[in-house]
Image (cartoon, rainbow, N blue to C red; front, top):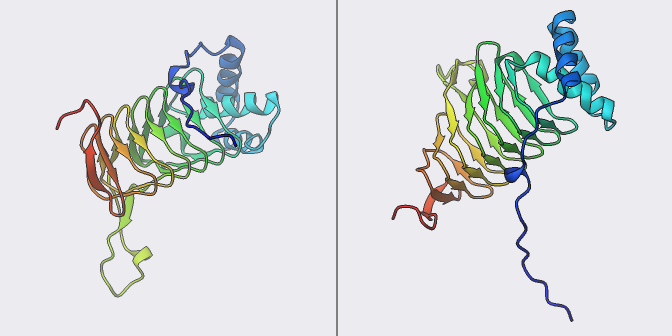
Length: 226
């Protein structure tokens, strides 16, 4: 009987060297930006969002680049990934956006996704006041919420009360586990680890490990402060 053992594999995304995008890709985005309306660019992105051909990938990236405030080199966009109000977003070099990820912006908001960030499939990011710094790992299905209803007065439905947007910051090198939820106003510190399924209701110190519902401190990462 064979015995299954853990395998240790060399990281791929975090070590990937980003090459500049080809000149024809940049030229296509420039042409689209100059000749198409925002609505037309959104339509192009939507039409090719689920395509699997090289042309789908090319036009998907070109439309995102034409719409975004900044769009880096080597960005990979999975099938079915959607973003609203890309004009408010700065997307860095080497970013990976997984299949069916949703990045929900707002016309008066701002979102930064730093270089080499990895956003897993089926992620949801409330991107109205959000910074995801460089080399962040965002697990599949993980969510960040950036707003909440005031809930007052009590004589109207909660969803009819004022919406309060609070900034969320995921600092460099942090890793957010599968299906975790980060709530409005939270900062996850540099190099911190958020366990799978955790609900993060308060700030996480740099290089801390937290888990649970609500997320609680477990320990410092090896080599970090004690």
